[in-house]
Image (tube, rainbow, N blue to C red; front, side, top):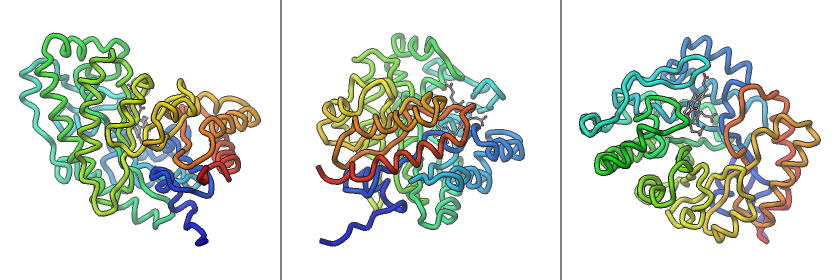
Length: 357
Ligand code: 1CP
């Protein structure tokens, strides 16, 4: 038998395609971020979060930082999902300690109809430029993930003008002006499609769509305003000659996993409120699964953290198709040493678990 060509350079892409791997691949949402002192130093040097995103050399530098410390199996482009609404003219600013804020919000049919679709090579040219630079810097060591927000999630931020707990403006729009909200979401779908295609052309080897707010919708609204457009993207994106895999992370939408398995995504990201075993049953082996350790496990002792990593891997069970990740982003006050504990534990416990059952 031919030994399979597998290792850090390709185990992530193989797992997304549900091919056998030597051990479970791992990367972590927000792996380049505030828990790393070197990230905080670069951000300070950049002057603002948006300068960091808009300067390809700096975006490349922070993308590489976690890979220099940990044996991660993938890099993720350093950017933000809110670059698209910014390029649509909303004026994005990140206020220290408060998160993103738009100068303008989008709340009426007139606001929606005035929006154009940004050209990713022109209005967002700093993003494909960063992708090219990062690919060169990575030199094939690990694959690079590109990403975008889902149309529904972007619409939430655009209507609310920033982070929210109530979703009052976007839901008012949904109930009072459903036709206008559909027009907004369709425009965003086209914008996200072009943006991800530009990242793929620039060299992104997998793309992830963050539907961070899918879970705030009632089931019928979820199908109409979130999942329909996730399907349009999963099926409509030109994935290029390498047939780049698409990962969809619809947070809080575990109830819809069975339906999500059929939208045409290669993999689904999962939060920690569903077990991987149950998720595997609901998705019937049609997709790979990415997740799903509770990010708060990084505050536990190394021994407890290792045990929780082992439990997630056992919960997935034997067979290929698992990419280890947290169920949401790593939090800023985590001790970076805990990331080494996590990554090493995944590689140790994942060995042998991921061959064909
Ligand atoms: O001041 C700082 O340095 C800000 C912290 C930060 C970072 C590190 C923000 C602000 N964005 C990012 C980078 C980022 N955002 C990445 C980079 C790659 C990596 O993972 O290492 C990615 C993939 C995102 C995606 C993103 N941005 C999402 C989807 C994932 C999720 O968290 O659900 C969302 C919702 C955003 C919006 C956003 N950007 C930043 C914050 C604090 C937020 C959340 C705002 C809120 O509370 O609603």
